[in-house]
Length: 324
Image (cartoon, rainbow, N blue to C red; front, side, top):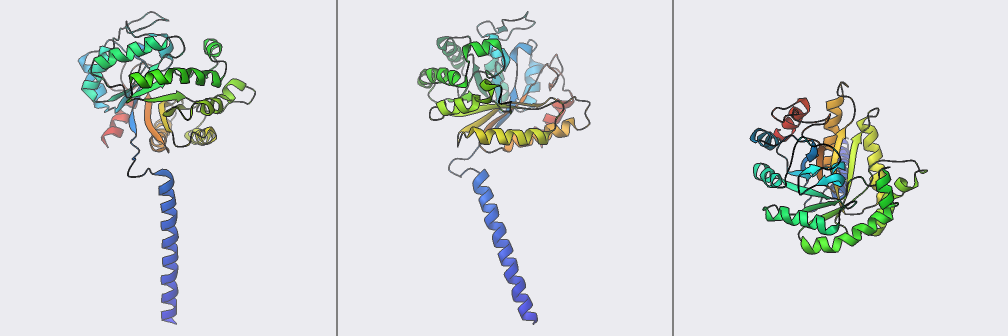
């Protein structure tokens, strides 16, 4: 009897272990890239260059301490009103100037790559190629290119130029060949909407579907922005984002999270815990190869003080993340 019980116990142990192994193998196959093509996630920060103070060594060194593997130029919405030749925003009075040579200085301090956001809305392709060429001549390799920023938004200028996602996709397809010719080692991404919208908003509701249908065989990656809503939680955003990305069906294309953050009030006792969960989520999400927090200096969710010479609480949180 004792031998029978022992044999049954061993059999159950074998079956349980074997089932767990199969389950783990399936999960690994689903979420982990192959050895031949490992998924490296570049972690770093988006930065609206128009919001930075004039640069100095203290600012460069503090950005260096954050250990960014990637930075974003010239930022988000600023992209469509940025004068790269003068290093200023064209829609308001400038308190600082940021010539492109600062990109080279930042790479020297941090060894970070840059993702360059092109103004596909207001500028010509030749102008944006001129910008990238000027940056390349400084000794900065052009590896990552993002075609516009949040052009799906309810902005009259955006809607006039790109009344549908298909119109945006057609512009992307027009720009791609020349960009690939000039910068053959670069990866280029088109932008998708990372949140749900009402079906009555036809333009935004169909944006992802139309962009993907018209670009998927030509583009290298797709970008998303993820923010925890002020009155929602990380779990809400997580569920929503999974649903949106699965519906977009971008297959095995790379996903670039070029902005993420927490829009909850910082007085919320769960603010930093929620932001940490979001950071962990985007850095480990399937097919994500870029994860950039918004932003380093200025704004309400910055890492450094307005003058850039000291770290605020959120900055200290990210210092701990990069040094753990």
